[in-house]
Image (cartoon, rainbow, N blue to C red; front, side, top):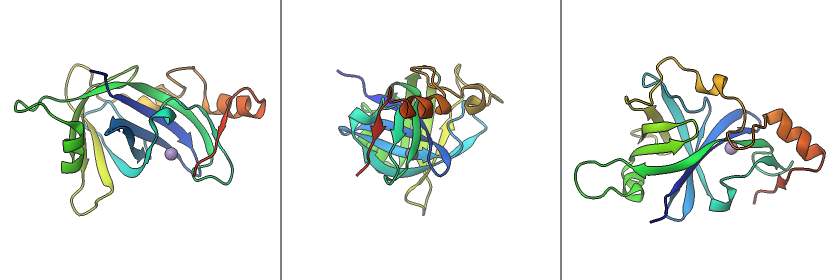
Length: 176
Ligand code: MN
């Protein structure tokens, strides 16, 4: 069976944020995380559910064009594959967990590894929390977004992306 992908895109739109995306049901379910993911189990990060994206967008690095929603540079901060965490019962399905509002997953990325939970907040349908679970991959006190600022795929910084798009060697993207 093909492994479902995840991706985290660092996106400097009107505000810097990190788009966390999971391949579920043939699309990329997406959350915008203002402060970015953390490997510290003591940290809960707000993750606001946003519109699904096409699978083809998962490895996009470049600039979203002026006039499009989210205009600004994007880089792939992390990517890899994920699996629903075994709950000890029937084979877990990411789609069922997404619907139920508690996604327990194991990430196999360049930077994000091990078990994470995405939990929908009660009474706030689009607001979730991303929490690192305690395991060998947890790094208490580690400031992931400060330590890792560039693309996990290409090594580009946000400024490199802007420069390369201006020079015509990297793509722009038009939304909607
Ligand atoms: Mn975004």
